[in-house]
Image (cartoon, rainbow, N blue to C red; front, side, top):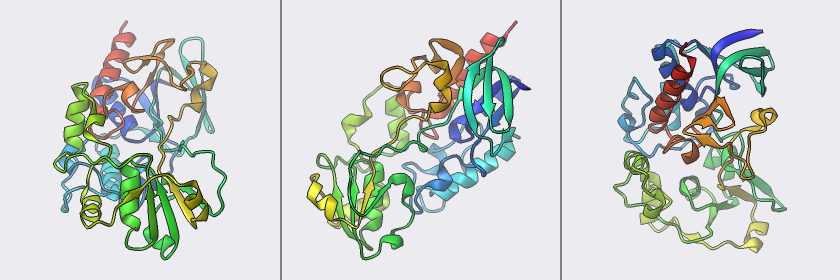
Length: 324
């Protein structure tokens, strides 16, 4: 049996932010990451993805992201930053380690993995949402992909491609495909662009003031999206099942669900598929903390800039609980 005061499940941005504050608090911890390389979900995104904010507004606690020479950083820039962050703070990441379940032990929680079991006084679950894409249950001919499957527009050159979804992923992928494919962009309602001056930093400020980001719109107009929109090339049409059926490829940009299957044995999830929390601490299991899954685990906590304050509060609560 392996032991640690705190086991962090997930080595992406949320897990690293938690590890930063655990290190600063002098609390023993390990990070178990299922991925073979650093970066969490970021190595698996599409090639042209850009952040909503410049580097200085896209940083984890302690160390600002290095500047990106062309404004909004690419996904690879984020991967490089997260890998360097691990090294800078000597974060004890074990990878690849697949966590299969978390259960209750005599004096804490047991984290069962494909390489052994860890006994922990507290567990921080930071597995995110990328690994659980939501796909509508639609039986269609042709290729049916999700945001997680899309990489490069050249793969679809000359094909009839339908992109479904009126959020940021849908807009960015549609703009990426415009020069290469016979594109149709379908949305449930007309696209709602945020004002061009809005970026991730502004959204974080609004969210932390408990404001409604949704009132501003659904899409941040990063430069490629703005250019395609302004040239009249990014035009959305209403949902059309017949057109979906005729497409060579349908890319569903329809969002994600929280990855919580490893917590099933604790029987904490409600009818909405979430775990009831106070802050990030599970109401019915105070030794478990959920970090970075979205607004229900902290304002803007699923973002690079937003996860830091929530991680800090989580570790403060753990430190208080561990005091003799």
